[in-house]
Length: 434
Image 1 (cartoon, one colour):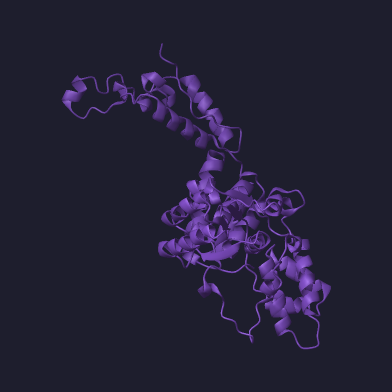
Image 2 (cartoon, rainbow, N blue to C red; image 1 turned 90 degrees about the vertical axis):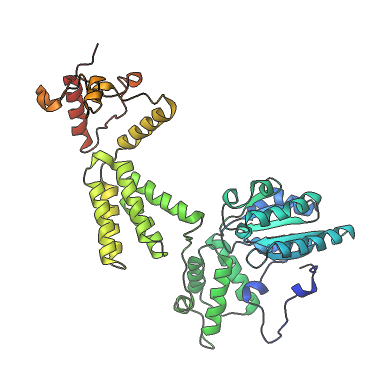
């Protein structure tokens, strides 16, 4: 790694405490980087830019442990640039100004600065704006790393001045390659099945994999091979789920769409992914209530009631048993007949409300509580449906400009088929006014 602009940035050395395995194994060249072939393979855009020493400011977007920090360090080394790591958690505007002033002085001396910002999504708008003039003047090449979608988390002005490179989760084969490299370098005695176990648990995160290997090595009995049981004891599995991030929305979307597609097993899986990762069960319950109206509607009149009952049951029982009430609801909603007729109808009505005149209520369906209002014609011509044969009066209730408009189109799904028959019967009884 190239030198820092600030002596204070140098880590305090401690010869008795070696760096973690993940740090000791960190690649020094592009050829040592595992994964990201779509960016770093021969002739690929990012590799070409690095080899030509034409590195732009960039945002590296990808899940944890895929090599964002490593790649930034390799870029700095290959382009002979000063590498300045900057913490979005620990730094503010004052620190930004100090770093930028030093970078500008370095540029005048012919040295290039790569400013690496981990978790750039944690910077607020004012902090991100502070980088803009220095990126534009070329004082720094900015490399931001984020696990969150930069479209939502990085200012559009800064985003427009940087290339976004999407890093992909490492495959199990990538993780196995890293583990075998570490085993060889550290002379670790481990069973093949244990390597497979680590690769499975790591979920594409190289740092997690190497940390598990290191801990398993440290806790294994001297002279014995690391076994899958040793690995399980060393590993504390963390599911890829962030209640405040993009994965939260991806998984709730997966649940909703699995329910809509009547896939009971997939719906249960995504439900468990959320609940076991610590999602607020009442958030899930609210989404199930929404689904019951939005995607089932009148095709099954019990669906909404069951969703509300599941919410109430969870509030009454609590964790962990309350999860079963939500699971029972998920199974019912997935298996229920589907209809979005109410959802579509309301959308069409809202569109008309927004884009047509707010016509007055027709006089014949206005209330007339006073003599004056009655004299002005309020309620004149109103027909009381209970006194009409068939309980359907020959009377329009929409404004004149929307007369004859049909919003609700029932489907032949579950109970809605009977509703469709009933509405057709009502329409036949109602004779439109001439």
